Amino acid sequence: MAAFRYLPAPVRRAAVHAGAPSYTVGAVAVLRRADGCLLLVDQRHSDGWALPGGLLRRGEPAAAAVVREVREEVGVDLDPATLPVPHAVVTAAVRRVDVVFELEAGTDVEPRQEDDVEVKRLGWFPLDRLPALSRPTDDILRAIRVLPSR
Image (cartoon, rainbow, N blue to C red; front, side):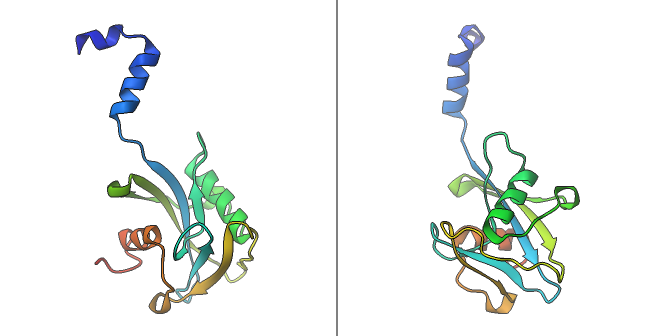
C-alpha cells in the first residue's frame, strides 16, 4: 500500500470510489398537524404512500433539497431558516441515507398537488389509519419513532 501515494490522483480517486460503498441521499419532511395527521403523497414511481421529499442534487444541502421538494410536490413553502435539526436515517441494506425534518404544520398550511407528473394525489392521514406506505417511508417513520418498531 505504500505505492498508493505514488499513483496519479485520478487513479487514487477511482480506487477509493471503487472500494467505498456509495449511498443515495434524500431529504424528506414529516409534516404533522396538531391533530396528529401526517401529510403523505402517492407518487407514480413508487408503491405505497410516501413522505414529501426526494434525492439531493450534487452539492445540494439537505435543507435546500427538502424546501425544494416540498414546494414541488405539495406546494408548501418551508423557511430554511426555521427548519429543525434533522434526523439521519441510514438503511445500510439498500445503501440509503434519509435526512428527515420533523415539522409541525400550522393551521394555515394547505397543501396542493403541484406536480402531476410525479405525484398522483396527496392527503392528511391519522396515525391509526395510514394508507399502505412505501417501504422507505415505513422505515423512516419507525426509525424516528413516529410508528412503533417491528
